[in-house]
Length: 268
Length: 268
Image 1 (tube, rainbow over the protein chains, first blue to last red):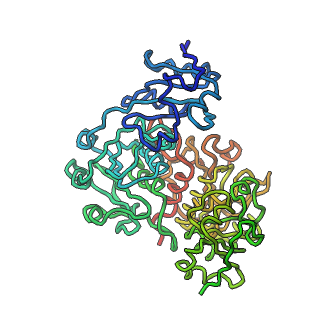
Image 2 (cartoon, one colour):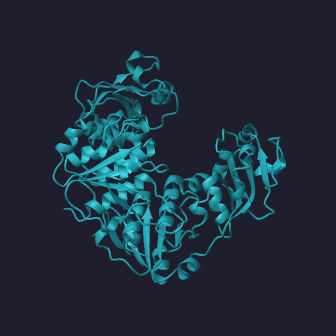
Image 3 (cartoon, each protein chain N blue to C red):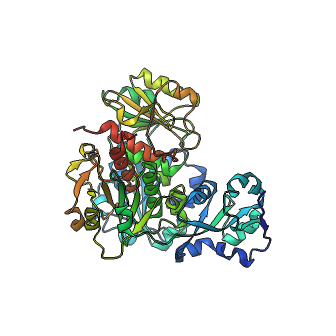
């Protein structure tokens, strides 16, 4: 039995975290996040890093969600409201009717993430990935292929942005990630931690299917238009995915899936 | 020198095809389409299947686009208007300022597409892909890895829908595709044309990296939720992409990229 707290006033201060979701997405939430949907909520419940501060759920769905809600710590309030109240709070029609307000874990240190990685770890290292769909897609693939974690440079967008969480199918809540400070030297940090550094680029030298597997490997990906900085390419193995004539790029999330599949194929 | 026709009235009947773009996206355009952006326009110019009926372009961009516009047949009118007029016609702010109204080629016959394929052709066959982002992403990957074409069942969405064209980076305008009628037997048609049929599913038996390359191969993909029908799976080689524990699916466009990369790796 879930003890939901009924809310009938969109201005109720207990649900202030859910107000004007889209406008506040744009501002950013500094260590907090909004997650939506049942699959993502299940990942939040499972996350050992981040935690739910509260939930706001369509009252009609409380009963069917009970098995999931019962796994939350008992001090997490579950607010129930009508679809109309939820949409009024959120500021747009929210048909899924499942929202969570989350508190992000303190940021991981990059060095800690890298040093604690297993001997056959695959790390995804991202440079200037600013699109939330791509960020979410990369996390989904990193989780699917058992990557140890994701390293972000200072120009990457937030994996805990609402849309990135949704596209990641909640994996950005469970897969460890760490962010470099501006000016940090990504390849140097990776090499220092014993990682082979693969930089993916249409101008790469080695065809992906010839890249050997094994050991600690970091896969570095940049944004589709500008690609990776020359200074980074120079200090990495330059790998390409061979494409048909007339086509010169793949979506970066798709690229991550192709490379991760290659690097982990044949693992038990 | 491109002879653009200046339009200053959003109600000008010569640009009626561009009115209320989003509303008409929903209704469907029966053999016509709207394409947007410079990259996509370049693909339309290059397409040997579909053709431009007219263009509507931000007057400020006509000069920089001249090299591209000059490749159009001389009877295709190029309408020029201000950003404000274009947005008023389209019904939403259209910052790219490049629109094309296209006429789709007559539908290809599935049998023709399959029979004319080369001896080492890879065909992508889609069942119930209803999401335009996924459709566009699959076309982009099919083109990138040199697939011969795409076969769609009756439940697939239109690859010439505006958003699908955009996500495909225009490749849905150049890569041949053919649509099955409702009730057509996809695996039977593929087998009759000499194709090995691979059906991708999390419950597949063979790991992708063990699937041999070569010969005519068709890769069958279904929607992420329901997956492929049992009746189809029973008549195909069931292939899976091995994933980490706790993750049970990949995005279907990403899946297409991973499988196409495997099937075409090592080609010249």
